[in-house]
Length: 166
Image 1: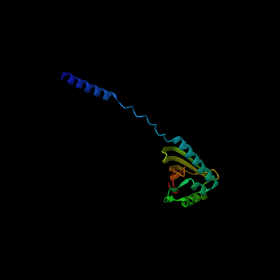
Image 2: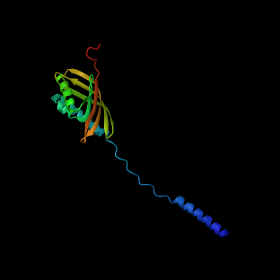
Image 3: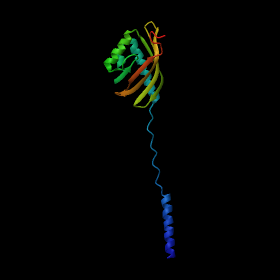
Image 4: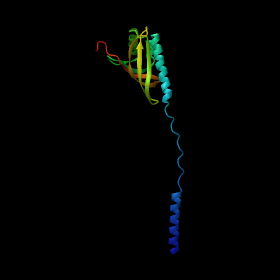
């Protein structure tokens, strides 16, 4: 009996030892999903902003509107938000007819993911004579539409005093 108790004790210890040392291999390390390339997105945003300036110089309001998503909103100062392609064309047509011949957009900062970008920037508008007409800041939200980054929301305001303001 003494031998069978000893044998059972040894069997129990061996079983416990084997169980503790019989670890399953660690799961294979999974590769992290590639991170979003914000610097690549910045190059695209800069390129679209440059195209915006070129289209202003050409007086092409329809071309400017093509940079906006189909469900975009343009939120200019002193008026309601403008939604839809025809409204955006009309808004830019009016701005271009007011004497704006050049637009410079500069990205100050850009944040986001593959789904949505937020851009903070500054703008400067001038006439055909090169005289500065307005300067200010903007926030633009970008989203992909048809595989291309498009302007989804655009809000801006002037750094200059309002007409008639002291």
